[in-house]
Every structure is written in structure tokens, then in C-alpha cells.
Image 1 (cartoon, rainbow, N blue to C red):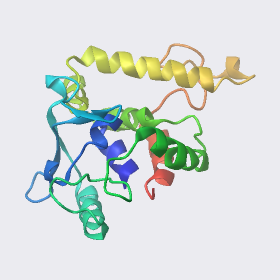
Image 2: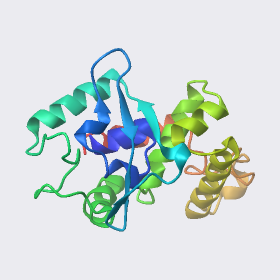
Image 3: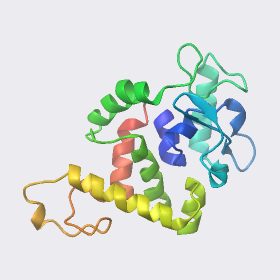
Image 4: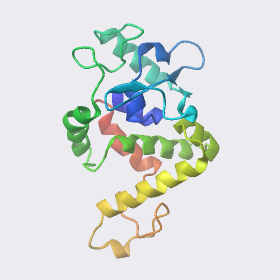
Length: 202
């Protein structure tokens, strides 16, 4: 459920692990999560910038998953972390990446995937839905649409380098990085959902 939240909200990992139950609004016609804090190097603090302080809508599918997660958890208090460790403390991104994300990503056929992959997945899905650049910018908590575009281009280039293949010259040109396209180069709505299909259960 944690990865489902990341991919559908586009939260930074520092924002996701800092979520407490009081930050989630599940009732009413506009369920959402509130970004009011983040955790960096184990320290709780304010969001990255004033633009990062935001409310992100969540789907009814995610609402039900969150309700079930709270019912089944041992730490359902309003100020408890949504995703605690077995002792009720906040998650450590390094441990989460090493013991949970990496094995799941390898099973999904994307061993190169990191936490930012989910953020880019969300961005791809938002654009596929027809959202405008300024809407995606606000959703992601950036101060400008240019930051979002820059991040997506940089991500495309990184995926391209990791996915270099001997027959790459015969591939079509990548619209994301301007070079020859490879399987992992363009993170569009289709391959984003293929990746997430395996990750949802985690």
C-alpha cells in the first residue's frame, strides 16, 4: 500500500514517511492527504518549501486501502506515523529501500527503480490524464512548471544510460531525452502501470 500511495500521489519519500494519521482526510467528496512536514536524515521538519505545503487528492481505491491499513495496524493514533516500523517509529528510507523496494523492483523487472521512480510515475499518469503543466507542478509541490520538466528530462537521460543496449541505434528517438530510445527510456503511462502492477501488493 505504501508504494501505491507514492505512485498515485507523487510524494517525496521524505514527505511520505512523515505522514501521520491526522494528515489524511478520508471522509467527504474530496479525500486527500495534507503535506505539512517531512523527515530528512531522521529529523522532522517543515516541507521543502512553501510550495511543498499542499493537499493532494486521493482516489476512492486508495481511501479504502488506507482505511484497511489503519484498522489492521497497531499504531492508529492521530499523531502516529501512517507507515511505522514494528516499534511505532518512522521508517528509515535506506532500510526501506534495501529490504523492501529493491527486492520488489527486481521482481517487477525494474531493478534500477528507486523512490523517485514513483514520483515520475505519478507525473506520467497525470499528464496522460490531460493535466496541464501548472497543475502537475502544484501537485508535485514545485515552484515552477520548469522544475517538473527539468526533472523529467533528467530522469529520462538517467534511464537511457542504464538501459543502453547494443542495438540501440536502430531504436526510435526518445521524446524525453532526445537520444535513441530504449525500453526504459520513456516513462509513459503504459510502462508506469506495468511497473506498479507488481508493486501494489507491497
